[in-house]
Length: 96
Image 1 (tube, rainbow, N blue to C red):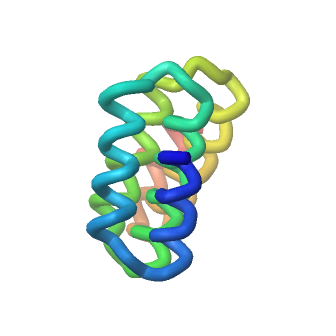
Image 2 (cartoon, rainbow, N blue to C red; image 1 turned 45 degrees about the vertical axis):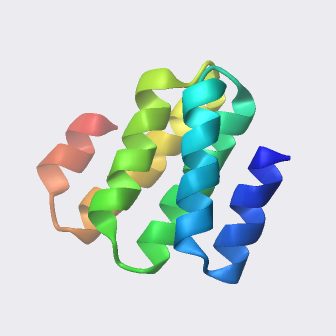
């Protein structure tokens, strides 16, 4: 239910609700796949609004804490895309 709140808030453009629900997932259930999925949804939300710092923080959270190698790979690719968007080519290449 908490993950669903993150998704619905992101779709509605409600950053506060998304941040609150995502924070709750990350705090109470950090090793679940739902926490990783919520962080990826949040990262996309922030990236679409040109809030790269917040997007990178969400992606970095997945890289450091996700229990899924697949989600870590997705986060790594998306973080490299954000870095490329910022013209940090060497850092993106190093990450990949």
